[in-house]
Image (cartoon, rainbow, N blue to C red; front, top):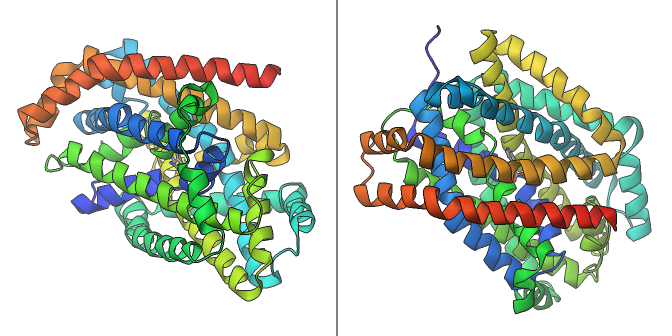
Length: 442
Ligand code: TRP
């Protein structure tokens, strides 16, 4: 058995985990879901879910990975016996499902980036829609998808230290600076105040609306890359010295900050250019139409902003897609004993095939996102909470105490994992399930 790779430093792990968390989900997903309604109620729910439910589950996932030193496929069985092997499969199937369409979204992002850079922005919404139609169908969608998969594969082949850690250490600070710059620029726009107001308007009844609840749950879990084994895998490359509760707080704070900043940037743009209706009105691709169309109306400044925005989105996306690839790759390496290169090639090809239906049919992409990217994640979070809180609480405690987490922190986490997260996640899951099916049948 070859020795398992390890992160070079404590920050290597935090950057990689935050890199996985911060992605298209924060930039495009946050704006898209926030604009579907809810305003401040959506925001508050989202933040509450992150704090109360997701943080303990995040620690749980990390502990499972570190204490077993195994990939997500093997970890549950290793921790509690082969009966739990099925759970491991969920943690391989879900990242494959998300990875399949994530590469397609990345392809759109890349196309829009190149178009903004070399050709220019569309003159109005009709032209923007036509452009989006052209990149989201036919041959060009495949080119974007393939380039994105190949770039992701190159990083993952280079390994945990040489690829993932090296890339995320550079990308995360750059991303943060660019985003701060854009949010600042957006605050100077004429419609900025109106945009902030829309994002922050309070309407108490929204708090209990099923669609708001579903969006908040989906946003929290998807954005944190939670519930499907990413953190298990990344934490399996960790040493004892890391204090996981602290790392979890760092990752969740960075991720939430980026989501909020992105909202504070996109909403002013939308309102300044009269596009407020268009992000939520249509499909998943609306942001790719509305944003370039809006920026297109202010000449060269708009073009520069668009180039920066789509570059930033692509950087954020690639640090996430490497995590989606690493999970199945690491499972294949553990289970079949293949070497890294062979595993990466095999899994990348599989992701390409699985992504084809999404590449050619936006509705398929949308449905996969809702089933895998929302429901399965929430289910995974529920199982993890039960698993660490009830099935292997001793291991959970031991691992944290070996790495010097205080008794108070351990007690708090165990209490949350046992009594608080499971019922709340279960409610969130049921509400989301019902809301989704009602949406589909109406
Ligand atoms: N969190 C990433 C985003 O916000 C996407 C992502 C990467 C993800 N790995 C994941 C989502 C695992 C869910 C589960 O874009």
